[in-house]
Image (cartoon, rainbow, N blue to C red):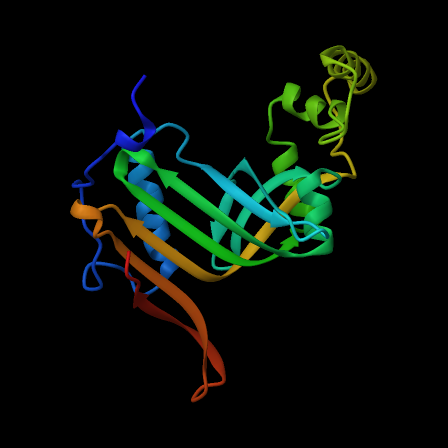
Length: 217
């Protein structure tokens, strides 16, 4: 077996500099996400979500981005799950996209809020039927005795709701409102490109603006 300490990779696909990047991080993210989709990398919409519990211990899991705009990045899940409970106690979170084939990482930090019930309803009813039934069948993050519990729950809710399951009251969307972005592009000799965008007050106009800075790798 190859020693882990011997594994090496030279990053040489692209570069990221201030002149060729957008001043608005949302536009830079839109460009990179589009390029990841166009390149057909595996699950370009997958992102790691990091939250912190009341015991101050962080935890991570992979979720799927389902929308983004100037208001933030949206995903959907069970509000009673571990991440839902942690966000209820501490609404600050971080997201990370890792597009390995493009040698790129995007990190996002900010405060999280629930999306409106109307947004959650709209997305829920766009999902395949088995996914809608699954939202009822799975007591996410809770201990169960075996897979049979899930199968039995799915059968029960499938018979109850037939083709029209409503959105469960414990299921819906979250939106992370970013106050910091970081774009990482792998480069040769470990001299990677890192651009950080931080939301800073603009004292002249009484509003906030994005400040772009280069970080050492």
